[in-house]
Image (cartoon, rainbow, N blue to C red; front, top):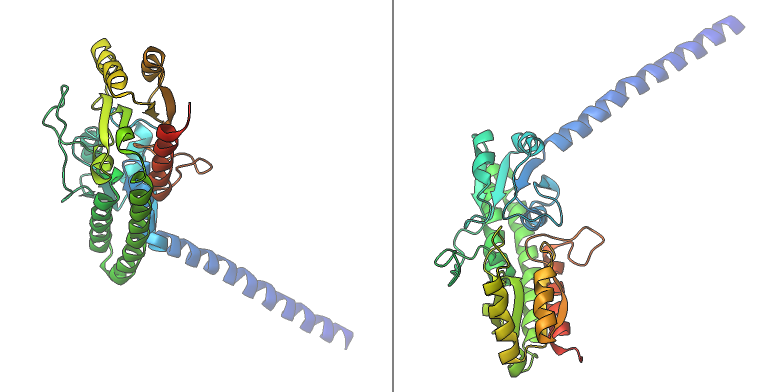
Length: 310
């Protein structure tokens, strides 16, 4: 009798074990299938990748080719970048001569759809320097133009995965509402700057869209980040402007070494008003870890720099 009961117990234990072992790989395969169902969206830099993540939600794996803090104008794709790009289902770029290096990238992924997120923005053109007549690529610095980016991203993701069209539409609508809220906040805040103190002096001329939106005047050392930036002529011009207009503070961007702007500070007595984020988000623990935070941080830094007492 005891042998019979022992045999039954062993059979039951075996059944339980086999059942557990058979379900464990099945659960893992389901998890892997769920992960693989996500669209892999590659963006050329962090700001676009953040926008794509907001619109794509849990249907998209949003990846930035460049890391936070990277200078994107003269970036050169690495072999690892080309490998990463080959895994993408869709790629998002800004365009307007910002990422001229994507030509090499495109050649390595001929079958990947590339979406230009700046399509249909109200383009502003550079008026001086060697780039005169070319589009200023930094349209995302205007929340109003940022909304156009979101619509282009929605359309791109919908084309890539039409079965999620309603989901992407809802995500884009909710995110657009957040951008409009930040736009209203910036308009009220920057509108409080006094009329005689509404000049934004930066290293790169990356704020044309922002200054146009909020009725500010823009001055800069150079139009586009390049190897020829920071010439004596550029510095002398800004020193003269800062002195003539009695501008209390000048600024530089997170991806630019502020040494040249420090020369302006030393020659004029103006303050270095702070670091502005334009071409890249900050790391996650920084002040501009998302597109919305970047816009708010920029406005707060400008206001603090131009209104702070010496």
